[in-house]
Image (tube, rainbow, N blue to C red; front, side):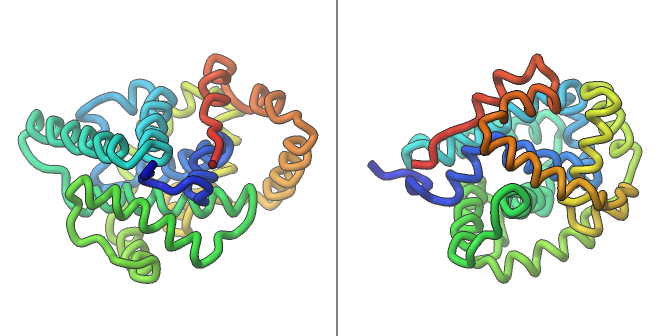
Length: 254
């Protein structure tokens, strides 16, 4: 059977690991709150109303694309394109092309950063495979002016970080919502994780101070995971009402 992402791909390893996925969205939650197009999230109201539920709906789309046969994956991409077009029609103007690229770039960047933090650095071949996967998603969405290779993407990624981020009232409103949903100590943990995960431009804008202790804590997490205590750790770190959904994010890479 022909798949959008080949079985055994590192992309499947990344998007089939619940812990890596949570780190991807920890980083994305920080950066997108700064994006100059973040007002679109407030137009639909879905993310501010329930950030964690929005996370799961986004992951379902991503996993459908990554793990599905090619035809079904492309149907899922087309559904996303149609949904965004509907939002644009309701608001009366288009989401900027650079904003679509920003989202794709975040998914590429934080996929790599999260996997490296919990497991190991990607090889050059794996980086290219990750990039080409999300470039194909962008093509299916009709996003113009995408780089053709990983090196060119890195250059454009830095340009986007320099040009497309600004702290605003929407930034602070989103972070207040994260605080409300997570509670104080989990929210503080989120910010600590973000401090060692996000690029410098994001960290500086959000006043995130890198936590020197947290990398050692992640090492301990790996040990507990190896001892099959992962579910206990997840129960401590995450709101219990979402635990079953979080554990359901794990998918076999094959």
